[in-house]
Image (cartoon, rainbow, N blue to C red; front, top):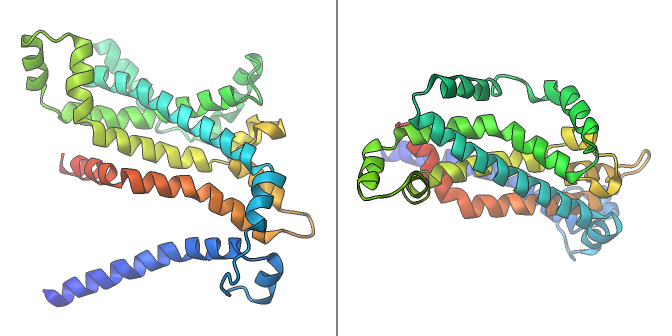
Length: 271
């Protein structure tokens, strides 16, 4: 028994080292010069150089890309989560055939590859004058996230006991009070899980900003990073600095929301 536990711990530590290793290598190389990396690819950052961070942030306009990415990601995730919460609660509690049909339409979004929608989305945004705008990109990401978020949240709402709502009604609570004061606290782990699982792909997405954004001042980080690649030469130190900056929000998000994510995932597994 003890031997199997040691084997499990060794496997987990090996996996952790395998997962963290590339991040440490990226951070280390961001503190070196491109010439040092060419001479010794696996060398340490001694003495550490911070010029690549300044070059990425100021000279390469990474500050603009970072703000654009943060605005688009945060607003789209919040919007899709808010819409999904309302829709999921209605789908979970109503027995209306109309709502069942609408739910089926929502769920059909899970089966369609998102890249197939690029042409209708492009023409729709073009007709609305929203091509190359952060508002248009935000609405696209919000719409794309609604099927998955609704699917997860509806499952959690269905698993909550309806007796709690009936007790709240007896105490005089209206539907808004039941939703905000009774149901939302119960599904907080699911909300955290949905937010993280939507934040990561939106933050890292390259495809939609590449197609829908033409103005360089509206670029997001994944598209902005391509400016570090030259035809004949690449500034690897600045590239690693940019990648390190782009990774920081994701690491902070997982550190803050890990407990809620684990709670949400294990609660979902037990249902």
